[in-house]
Image 1 (tube, rainbow over the protein chains, first blue to last red):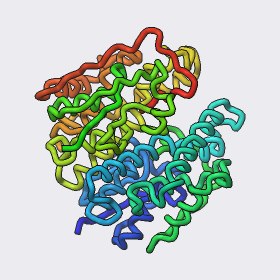
Image 2 (cartoon, rainbow over the protein chains, first blue to last red; image 1 turned 90 degrees about the horizontal axis):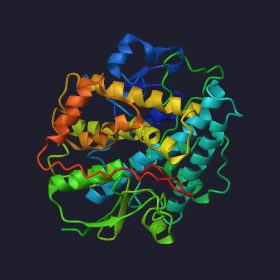
Image 3 (cartoon, one colour; image 1 turned 45 degrees about the vertical axis):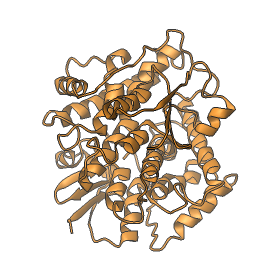
Image 4 (cartoon, one colour; image 1 turned 120 degrees about the horizontal axis):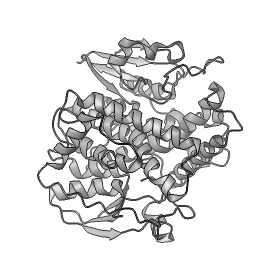
Length: 215
Length: 215
C-alpha cells in the first residue's frame, strides 16, 4: 500500500473532489492543509511539490501528482469508480477535460469578483458567466437522458464535475431551470460514503502575489 | 476492428494531434473534413455529433467521442503510446489536463486577434500572453531534466502538448529562450511515423455566429 499525502485546502472544490473519492474508498492518507490565501503555495518548498503552485497535489511514495482530475484517475484506477470498457474510460477522460475547460469558468466566476481580481462590472465577468451557463446547459442536455455522465454508472467523471457545479449558485447561477443537473447532484450526494466537507471561502480571501487560483 | 470516422479540420492543431497518432498507429479511418469557418459545425446534424460544436470528434461504430485529448486516450490505450504503470497513466492524464488548461491560451492568442475576436491592443491579449508564457516556462522547467513529459517515454502526453506548443511562434511567442522545449519538439518530430500535415489558417478566417473556437 503506497503512502498517500494530500496537499489540500478546505474551501477548494478541486480539493473536495479528491476528498470525496478518498472517503468513498475509505483510504488512509496524511492531509497537509495548504492555505492558498496564507501564502502556503508560494514557498520554495511548495514549488518543489508543484511548480504550478496549485492545490491539490497527491504525493505517492514521494512522487508528486498535481491536477485534481489526474489524482482522481490515479485513485480510481482498478476500482468501480473508473469503468473498464476502453470507450467508456476515454469518455471519462472526455468529461474530466470538459470540467477543466468549461466548468472551471464557474470557479473563476465564484472566486474572482470576491477576491478583487475582477470588479463585478468588468466585461470579463459577463464572458465568464456566459461560458459557465453554456457549460451548465451542455450538462443539462447530456443528463436529460442519463443518470450519470458515462455509461449510466457513477464514476470520477461525476465526482469531478460535481466539485464546481454544486457551488454554481455561489457564483450567481441558480439551478432552478436545470432540473436534470439538480437531480444528478442529488444522485451523486446519495452515493455510499459520499461526504461533502467543503469549508466556506474566508470572507477576507484575496489573491496574493503569484497566487494561482486554478488547480 | 471498429469503424473509425474522424471529424477533422486541416488547420486545427487539436485535430492535428489525432492525425499524428493515427499516422503512428497506421490505422485506417474515414476523414470528414469539417470547415469550422464554413459553418460545418453549426448545422443540426453536427449538433448531434457534438453538442459543444467543436472539432475533432471520433466516431467509433456510431458512438461519438469529442475532446482531442480523450480521443488520443482511446486510440493509445493498449499501445506503447500510453504507459502501463498506474502512476504514469495518471501522470499522462495530468499533462492532458495541463494542455487543456494552460497550453490552450496559446491557441486563443494565435487565433483570436487574427479572427477579429480580440483587437491586438485589448488588455485580454496581455492576459493570454502572460498565461501562455507561463505554460511554456513550466514546460521548459519540466523538460530541462527529461526527454519526454512522462517517464522518459514518448506518449500521448507529448503529442497533446506538441499541438499548440509547436505553433507558439505563430502566436507571437518565439522559443529562442526555451532550449529544452525546442529540443523536445525535435524529438517528437523524429518519432517513427510522425507526420505534421497541419494546414495554414485561412487568411479570411473569421468567427461566425455560435462558433466555438476551442476543441
